[in-house]
Image (cartoon, rainbow, N blue to C red):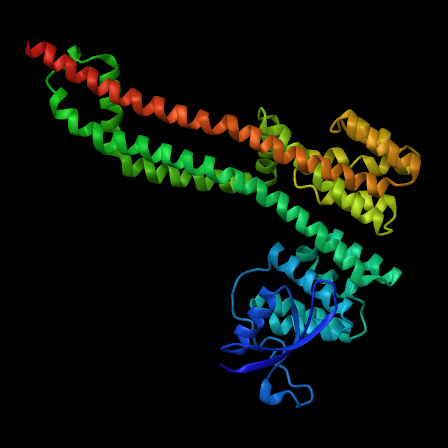
Length: 411
């Protein structure tokens, strides 16, 4: 198996040199990444002595996968860039290496544009500003503050921690909803199968009974008959209605209605609210800890909130502080924070440690969200199972009532 000499950086930015056996250059890169290393230079063993030899190709040589850049791509880019800068690579060299390691065409093209701007003399914050939709104001302002303070690699490390926490919280919510979603899907399929395929098998048995057939049986047979005759039209109607509903919910009016309704859902509405508050407090604490002015930090943190109603409530905090008010009072007036949270903010203001108090509040809310999700699902899962059982049992009992009625008439 071929051998490849490599130069890589570990998670702390320390350089490591060595030799690795791999079937190909791509396999060598994957193995290094699996070991928690960020490749800086990889070359075939025979080329070790060749100056500048590198298995990491030039910009665009590796990009193949399609699709828009995602937050996972942003996290990977930020993490590897922070490691390379800590290892001593220049910004343009680090960007060039990242472009070479990119496996998605859209990410490679985006980073190529950033690299061109950096080579033209622009700082990183100005180079990524045209790609605001991907990076976001929070990211750009964090990078700008790191450049001003001469701590770009440290700021990128904080950004990695922030993005990882946000991703972990979002994935915990999604993962927790997978089982109930599957359970609901199985329930719908089971009921449709019973009404559309099982119930019609008994229709001929009940056909001549007329009014002698029990009411529950007549209802079930009628519904089953409807599914048999109009099932295709019903499926098309549901599909079209779902598409229209999704399109409307994507509109500003639909999004406002949906996000307002979801906050009013018992149990889960409070969880969604805490999730949005967590995003706000973590973003605000991270920005303040990095030296961003409080008014700018508030405006940026407000924009990271996804729910339009919660964002609107937070939108009044910065103007209130501009008018000479305190953050504690402004946040209290939103009606979103519990007394414990307000007290933490007050302590942060009085001690001059608002950034750390905001991050501590975010950690507390993180735990509360995870605990609340587990408790909510503890209630939801048995409820779904019970509902499914009652529906199927109702269909079966209705059919059995009809069969018993047939036997009674025969006697």
